[in-house]
Image 1 (cartoon, rainbow, N blue to C red):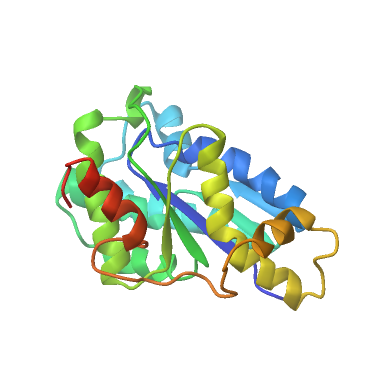
Image 2 (image 1 turned 90 degrees about the horizontal axis):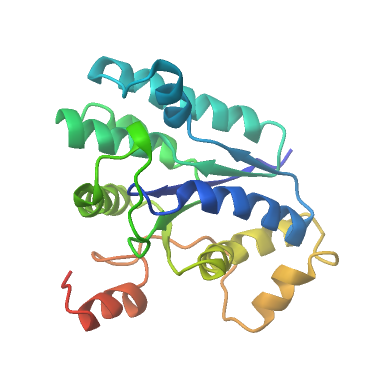
Length: 232
């Protein structure tokens, strides 16, 4: 049996991770005909149940639980869309508790992802109870995520845009991976959405890999930030 494609969605708070996961999974199922699962964020459910955020000694169990949910879905599906992964637990452990003990384990688990989608900071911050600390933490979290992704040479792509454009950005990033999966399976005839999209693009058959010290696409985000005067 061909292993499932695990697609990670990570990013700072209030950057649309859950919304993207909830729309991306059915879109991929529609475009490809593959069995697609969406694994929700365990941390959100944990906070709602316990009524507080985790303490430092509880972080490892959340990391492990999120990964177990992903693997359970991967056992019965072709594609798994993951609303956060162990990498987010490691980042918040470092941010909140100055604890880096989970980073290597998180990176090892993240390596099982076919591609990591990093949600850009181009959406307005919105409060969400216990889940969010404030807009001031978004850039530090984003910086730490990029640091870990690049240090461990993990394949990733930036997802940005407002409304439907954000979904299309994610689909564009995933199209080469999904196209190859369908070709390997001898499919594609019923997946005109993705194949039509790819005909007009110079898409590679393999997943994107780490590209440079700044971001996954230096011709895109780095230039746009420089033009905005935000630096990098």
